[in-house]
Length: 336
Image (tube, rainbow, N blue to C red; front, side, top):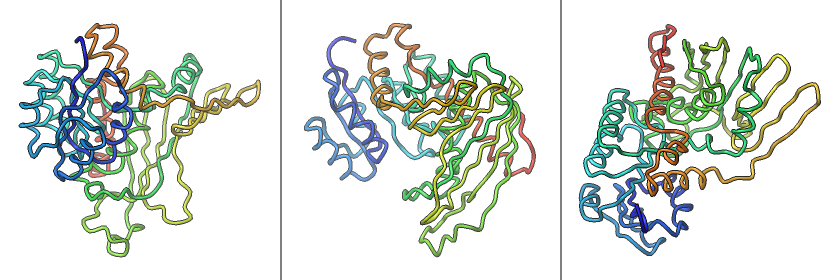
């Protein structure tokens, strides 16, 4: 595509503003439409950019503003029809994670996008960190036995997060970043998932969280095709004074590698300890790669998208398996 790409947005909340703060400075992108169920948020974003307009209906926005690209930043259970309507109109998409709470809905989107040659990038931002390539390089060929991971913190303030039917739960909505990273970093897929969980530490009435029904904490044991065994902790019960833990630790035969979420990697081996601190804005890289892929349309540029939709479905299946294991009390077999 020559000239400026026309961009529209569905969902003008926090993650949408995260993308907007970067893309608004791209000289080859112009915003033409904004939609949110709270119209004031869409109006605020339109005013901040000084172009485009806020719409009452996303279908009207797609038909009237005719965007080339669409940013979809909605709660997990709201995915489905938005994507299908965009595909019908030939609109390429950046979709934030998780891509759905329904594997069937995601697979329908994937099949239709393939049929219409639609480019979809999924917002697994960590894949674009400048830490990732040296980390993958360091891990490649090393004998790794165990991996330990954790995303343990508090409860996000948005209403839909506290219900599994709307968010998918903490693993699916939030810790999905680490589940995705472990797949990407190891070049290997999970085979079995077994999750134990607990509730009772969060008192919904005491902390004004009506409808809260997600697990307070869980531990997932995972086996991978390459023989690695991983354990990932997930928790949202920490209060004041609790220290958040976010990241992955890989225990190789000759080294220990600590990935501190979006901050740094610490390599420890016979030569000592080395820290590599991130210097790149991974969000800027993610959005730039997507825009360039759509503008060019060339396979070599499309392949630079590190989280295409078909691969994001694998991470979705991986995380949804934890809910299945919690509900059944049994390990879940995967074939990714």
